[in-house]
Length: 638
Image (cartoon, rainbow, N blue to C red):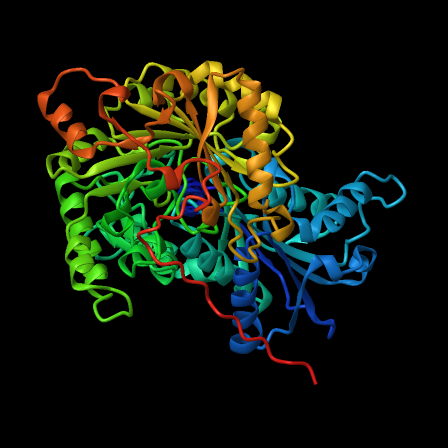
């Protein structure tokens, strides 16, 4: 071999080596493996789009995907409720898409338990093997709440694992939507686009971090090939090929942060806002709300007030129902908001000013009062009184005590001489300890045992029972009026008289309100029916039994038959010379708050009128009001 020939070969080798290393570098930057092609299913049998749903969210998403597949892309799919499907037919399917919600404790919704259990059983049956679904392609999208920790989208993840184990080909990775994170819509849309791309025969490239789809390739190549100035190719030295090539950061605008600004996101997403406004809520700022109560409208018309009018002497037509936090840490089965409000374990949202919340709440409330002008029964005198609220029920929805500035908000209300009735769901004991005096502090005691509390309240916290007990103990240290609020759900907690009585010693509440659950119509979020609603006679019997268990410490003091509600009161404190003093001297309360000195619940109690006392002929109905019974005209049968 001549020297010139050797020199030529070495030069060619060097050029080939440099070229090879350069393309290896480009390949490494993109992290792309060889292209993989998933052809459109040649089988004319329509694909199956299953929805595993409890609240209806998964069904709504499935319907949206069906429209995208069938109407816009002409890809035939059938929408299927797994409750009506025979899972043994799965081996016949060639395309499966599942939108799956995760319900209590990581379990599937009611409509899909048999379907999910069948898959779990067959995937562990050696007779089925790992080729049972080898002719099937699938995709799974999960709907859940990240706040439930390890069980977040557990059903969707498990379904993906089971289907892969049976030999099915996963078209796209399992999508994971967070109903409480405010990003469900955008995540689902992105996932759906990838599904459509694959089903239309799109190219799929695997990378080290997941999968890149044809729709992403153009932007990926643009990022790789353009320099920071939008110019041509990067110039890369050979010594940089080993991984020291120039890096590039992509700018992010506010719209791409899913509602987050400076690390804080909006509590009320557009979807939540629409749902709450549909129910009559007026949203204040980014996390508060106000709504006019039916009892406010009732007393404006002279047709009677709520149970708080009977028990504590509030003027229902001058009461404003509001909350500084629409979020809650529970998802109770009897929630009358049907879980349209957000949930959370801690404050993680933008925070509005307490003065702004109070001013806006009063403004919105008075606007709604003005709308009752001209309504039959609304007199000019009551209308003018209603325009000047004197009470605030901080119990509209959510968990008001979560709001970090709750004390400042209470101060603003008291400064206007507006009384405060605050309700907490017994999951934030430290917040109870830090709370300033309110007119009356409630703790919801929805169950008396750990198992029943978990079943009824469906709490987010794993240590919910310990938090519940600590909340009751924190109540004991308060000097103002305190209340246990019991909601009786027939068939769930009406048999726990002994267990409830044992809780009395923990919090030593001044009062115990016992109310029958309100049936709010059919809801996929709740298993309750009218069969679970106790009669007033049931509530009376339970209350009398509970008072008897207290051995005289508490007696049945008042009732409001219309609300199916009974009040127990501490005998020693509130029964003076044989007469009950459950009502409140509101002016005295505000004077005591203004003084800034410690005071007790006995310092602002007032005499209960005879018509509100338990057993009175009026049943808790104010005789100064006019009873009104709606006439019901039923069509006669022919």
